[in-house]
Image (cartoon, rainbow, N blue to C red; front, top):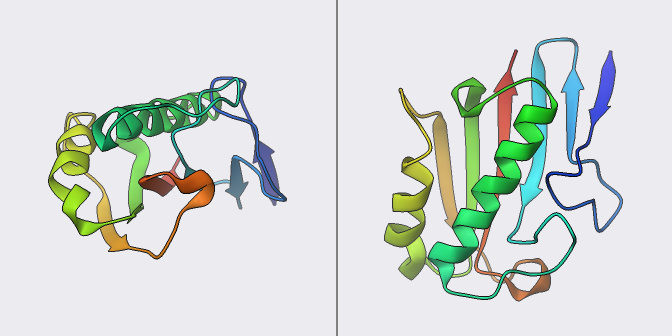
Length: 125
């Protein structure tokens, strides 16, 4: 079983991908979220402001699937520079009330639209 989830509370896909896909009834695989508003405009500001928008987008996708940040089991954070690690970590960590999910954080050569942060996740139902 494969079911696509999408929501107007996060930006629409800007390429050939889905916002999220539920697999075999138990897992939701979220595409990477960048700091685009749901209307498709790019957030201007430092990496903290960008991360706040990314987390808002993730919340929208999770809620559209009937889930919350507590359902995340694994995330991957992509940064334009590891110099952003502390600022992103502070915003990211603030959304979790209990134990946070497993996570990887990597610096990459570039991200879509020249942003500084992208986060993808896997959640369970």
